Length: 164
Image (cartoon, rainbow, N blue to C red):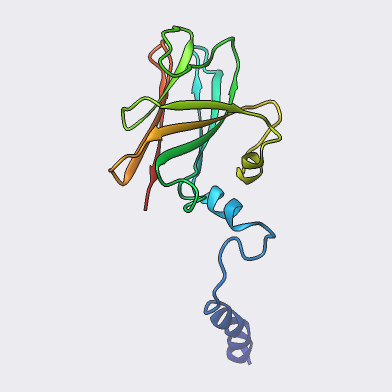
């Protein structure tokens, strides 16, 4: 009797294990949003008192919109900066800002975008108090991308993305 109950309990798991479900099967989301979740990372830099100085969410858009971004590497970042610092502009010499680079190369363009922008709908973490930037870099040949955010206080974070 116990063997029959055990068999009845195990049988559904055997059949369900053969289906083609993913973590996203039971959620109603676009393919872009699904790819965005898989190609996004979050991190933060803390100050000397172990408080967050900057919170950064980055999404590697080339893997999200493979047909749209081919000539450059595109990363959409959302940031929350606690103090008066900001994201450095391209070729900036300002000391109180956060510098961005990808595999040790500076961005070719940094565009601040509004919360209402269509791209924001595709990112998994989108708070209205964040600032959003579309950052463009020259095409990189390596398959591993190292996106670095650093400030003048020798604090930095590195987020790694895979191209393929």
